[in-house]
Figure: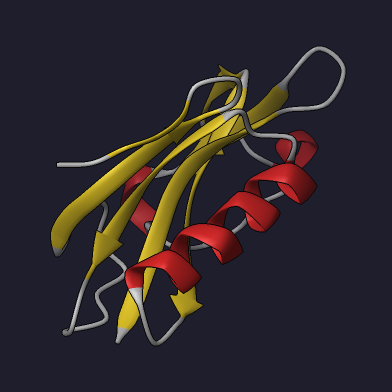
Length: 104
């Protein structure tokens, strides 16, 4: 079964400056080379695939991923369609550092 963990990766130092180019969606442009508006982000959203046979295995892998990402919380989704869209699939739990897992 495919599981996906959604979490926010804290940006280093003072955050990240990201240009927003609505006309060319999906293209990366260096901040200094664009006249587009720039937004400041303190965290970057992520959705990572976790291959596991059981929910318990997926939770263990998700905890390791969060530990190495510097994120302190995440939501775990079971998604047989393997979508990259945020919130896709069935939410099967959420994790918060210090509190552990809570199920849905």
